[in-house]
Picture (cartoon, rainbow, N blue to C red):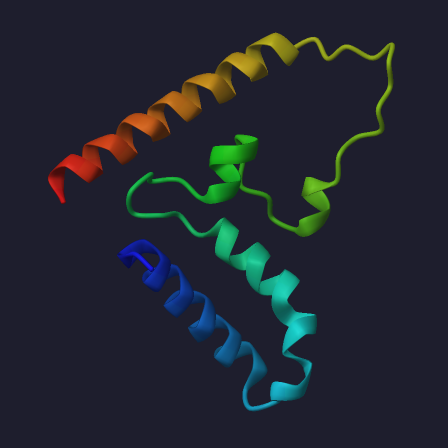
Length: 104
């Protein structure tokens, strides 16, 4: 287990303990909420949340992640610019991770 995994596990266990408050029998029902909260947190290395890295935005509620129905004839006018935005965002995150890796 590397340092990043230890930090992630520690953060998740703290969140789980805070939410459960001693009610250890129903921990599995809280995992989706903890996962959502964790993925909204801005990370030090990337300066973005995992949701921002993957989706290009930080959702406020889980419903924001529900995909739109697959409509074959529907083409979003800004689709090409959105794809370009997400590609540039991924490149920026990659560079930030590489830069942080060189510093540490």
